[in-house]
Amino acid sequence: MAPPESNRPAPNTSYFTPAQYLPAGTAFDPQPNGKLNPTLFKPLRMRGVELQNRIWGCFPTFLPPLCQYSPDNDVMQAWQHSPIGDIFTRVPSLSIVDATSVLPEGRITAEDASVWNGEQAAAWAKVVEFAHSQGQKVGIRLAHAGRKASTLAPFVNFPRPMELTREGIKRIIKGFVDAAQGAVLAAFDAIEVHGAHGYLITGSFLCPTSNERMDEYGESFENRIRVALEVVDVVRAVAPPSMPLFFRVTASE
Image 1 (cartoon, one colour):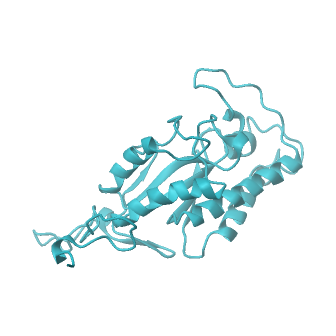
Image 2 (cartoon, rainbow, N blue to C red):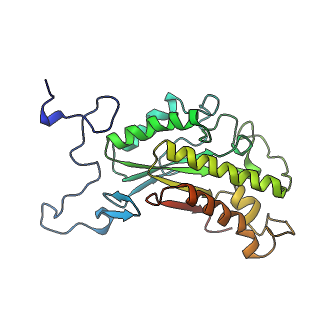
Image 3 (cartoon, rainbow, N blue to C red):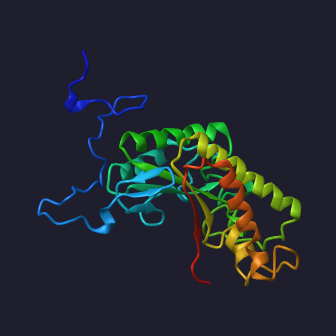
């Protein structure tokens, strides 16, 4: 017998969970008092993604997958599913999970979540499926930690980094391509390139203090932003035209 309309299943979900009549964070329009909604609670469309409000959840505000040291062989585990999933039942219309590595040597630690292969993408797909079952959108932040990568624990000193060769830069660009393909395979709604916090794109290239290169990737502003533009170009080429692409920056030195 078909379930009653009041408890119908969420569409396009491989397990039963009740469908959301309206996603969390959707405001009545007009409000019960007759006033119009404030801009914060008005819908927003970016490319092919429609958001019910303009409240986003991004680490470090309250999304906790960064530095949980819990993935097994770079694959998401149940520990991370629980706190992330909790956010999808609440107000943010777009939640962005953080610091997902694009290459093994780009991980902050050996226990970081990644998305450069099918097994990793399949684990993330379960997170995306639950977000969609709640009527919410979810994005992923692709990252290479640069000089802050390959550490053992937060209290261990960072070694002095070596300057990347051109071949190394090309390998990293390819890593972003593979990770973006994994994000698309996992059905994320948006991608954010991590260009902040002193990680690779900021710490090794954008920052004039730490970028000591004397080639086409250093010295002038145009040269220092070259890697960032190359990463954005290849990720945009992989992502569907309807998928929003964001770039996270550090706003001050």
